[in-house]
Length: 631
Figure 1 (cartoon, one colour):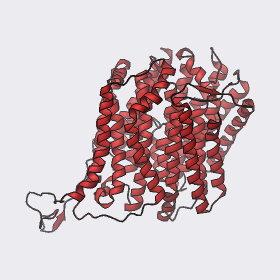
Figure 2 (cartoon, helix red, strand yellow; figure 1 turned 180 degrees about the vertical axis):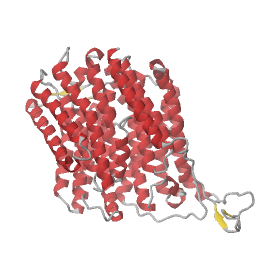
Figure 3 (cartoon, helix red, strand yellow; figure 1 turned 120 degrees about the horizontal axis):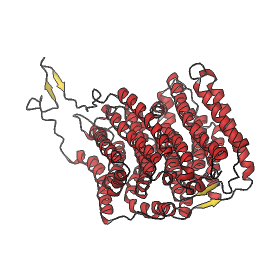
Figure 4 (spheres, one colour; figure 1 turned 60 degrees about the horizontal axis):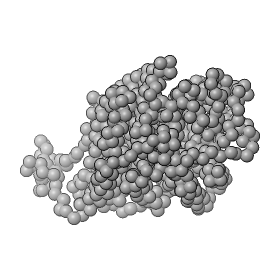
């Protein structure tokens, strides 16, 4: 209980200190110490509870806290309405939705029949895993941001320096995320849910340019649409449930689909918005305008993870239902469409954004199926995605500040010019397409679960996996190519950045190596408690992971040392090379350097066309999911 409360409140204390203190040296000390303390507390929590049974915590004066958190709901709504005052003419729908949402929560609070939740906080193996992701990956991103934000303002002199509010919001975000994963009272969970929406809104609009402001309101609007589903679930349980009026999350899940299916689907609707699933994906793409630490935080350890966490929690309720099949189809379709759209992108951050949407679509598909095998795969994907994607976002941010571009085509020869940075990117890429997808596709039980639920899901998985290999391979090829005349470039990467990059790179390899241990000690205990059965790993599974671990280590190391130990020959141009170089004489007799560029297939896979079609089809699938309640 004490550790859970500490993890929720300590980041809030750090946030307040960072809001008050503007001295750069003191800020660095607070961020570093706070990150270390939060990471240590999350590891201690995992040591105590990972693999153990569900632990429910009675909170003294919880009835008073119910009122205080509802007052917090009002405060968040008032703040957002105040921020909307200058956008009322352009975005009038957003304040309207905020008012409707607040009215629904007030109706549930004052007119409901819900008995108080005796144990409003809890911890189990799944929430312990999430706490590790938030406490380690999230705080490393905050440490990385110290140097990055200094450089950011050096490169963007026209952007006002709001680093006090920036670091306040980053740690406030962590506090809200810990609240989401530990709240057993749905009303409490909703409050922390809205804190993450508030923080993302502020962080996306950090630069206060017209584009960032517009995109921050888009994120706020689409997430508020989702939150209406969450508020509706609470209102339904408070006033309209024909069975048991309860806001106890774990109790509600135990009641099964007969009672919990409607609130589970409503909260999953909110989760799909938070996880940027179609038709809500646009907000996460717009978030790319924010500084890279914000993108990393939203994509890897906080915002989107809150969405899939809520959906996976309700996976047992969805098992064997048509509503669950609808959720799974939305996730599978999002996986396919986002993977195809990622192929068309040369902007590295947009590739990562689409990859995030696709990966989370796969998690949502697994949760919608709701079987033991599918949930096992979903949790494992969440873990791998958090570490590897955090590493990739931060790496891109550092590369952008060093070469002045985030375009993949400008990363030619990074393995020669900046080998250490290239190494961590290669590890991140290998961690994304070798580890999680290799495990998922090789795991026949997961494929069988998809086939049993709907053959269409297996088709979406197969056709969505092929483009992922394409876009990761394209990026990998640019990094490890060796253009003629390329030479090393002096470092210039700060200690804080290297600390985050190095630990996340090591974490990617260690997570892969520890996969069998993670499965048996962390995921299986959760499955046994929820499903009364576990997933037994075969020797083949372990062998496959050992091969993947070998590739995860050998591929980056081989690329790092190969150019140094080999003679680099120019490209062979059918004997037309000029003086043995990588150039040839064009039709005017002038020297022409050879350049290599990737295919992006934008003529076949137009991003706008795919997105428009994806949104329309996803809306229809959402309708299908709710229609499934009646079947």
